[in-house]
Image 1: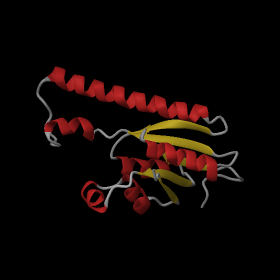
Image 2: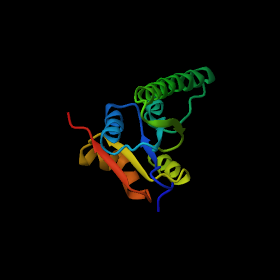
Image 3: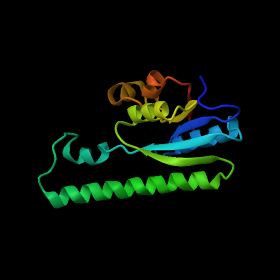
Image 4: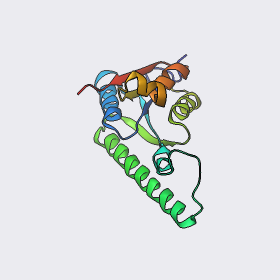
Amino acid sequence: MMATTGSERTVLIAMDGSKHSEFAFNWYVKNIHRPGDHVLLAHCADYKSYMSIYGGTAVVPSDHDLLTSIVKEEEQKILKTVTAIEAILKENSKVDGQVVRLTGHPGEAIVSAATEKKVDFIVTGCRGLGQIRRTLMGSVSDFVIHHATMPVFVCRHTS
């Protein structure tokens, strides 16, 4: 069931700031964008990067200043990525859309936002992880494919 009437569609494009997600956006614009589409460029920060400082454990440092510094640094990286995504949208003036910041596990957050916003389909990039890494680490695109209730386009960047 389509979320909108007529030729209008709502599209969610998962954007993590990588060349893979930018490729997915450009693929959408070139191949399936229609006038009237409303695009949600969804960014979900992955907070695992600062946890890796502590060996990937959920242990929180007791040094308040260190914790504050880590969170502030992570937030600056996120804002830089969101600003870059906003610039991509502005560069493509024929695309009507907005950047949406999500929280939580990226795959779950994307599916949840797509369901909540009643999008017609999802577009996501694919980092091309090998089978072993994908099995051990999981894959956002795999999660989205298996849990979304709407069509999902996975754009594989090959170069």
